[in-house]
Length: 363
Image (cartoon, rainbow, N blue to C red; front, side, top):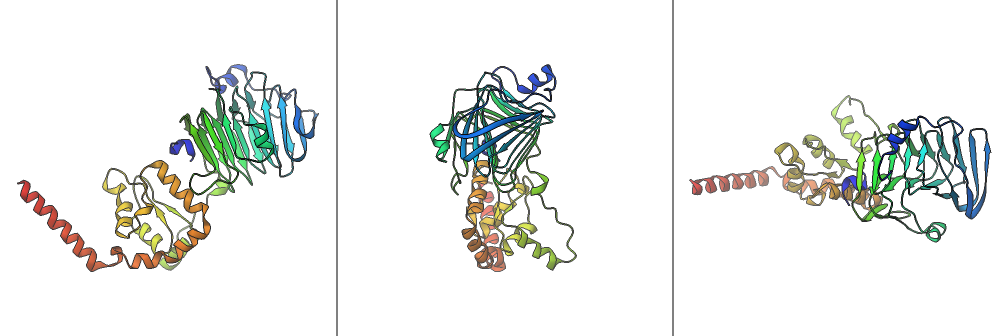
């Protein structure tokens, strides 16, 4: 699984974007058709351009002949804190140009493809999962880990805005594209491209919430990615003491790429903030690795993009371990060569002599 497939993980012959352009905007009267509960229980009611799906119980499965929402139209799932699996047949892709909301989680499965258009919005209290691959009904109804698997080569694409206030936003297919906005401040926002994808209920520190088990697939993420509700921009600190205190608001620092931090890396470590780095091919991109090596913290140096993400996820997934690391980080730093000027100078001198001797022998 690649980094792009993890994060960070529609049609076989033409994109849904092209379909929407050719056919024009969907009518405000366009709503899902032929829907009925086949597992769990509930009702479906339509008033004007609004459809309401009310579910009794924590889990339910609805089969549809078609599932598209026109601009100005709305589909609302009243499913409490539960989850509703929607399977779409009929051979037509699902196009969301209007509004889809849910109090809980919504799973939208359509082997013909799914696209959230530029005017489309999806807002859920739980998770939103869109895929061209199906999952076993029994596993879904039992809230077991879900394996998304299928032969569809269609695409899942987001051009609009998808957000979850209390769950995840996951797009899963052999080909996935995001050119809009994904936001899951209390969960995971991920694009997973593959033939077989495992979705766990809680994730774990070793592999996370989503795991591509077969086929690398294709992922194109050109969207805004992180919503404004997940960004905190700090203003200029009036003094150095206040500046250092601001590190208390940071759990994990990601070394900028390709121009690594230097003073900021040392400050972060001193204030108990783990710093993860991905070395590049030049000095400016290897400063972080040099500092972490000298500090004896080589475990935070990533081998590649996938490893970089995995290390960040592992730290974030274990708050107790992270707290222990933070408490002991300054002591480790003080005991390392990075804070021992004499020992650092001796090692640097030895290295310089070694270089000179090596060049002399070559000459």
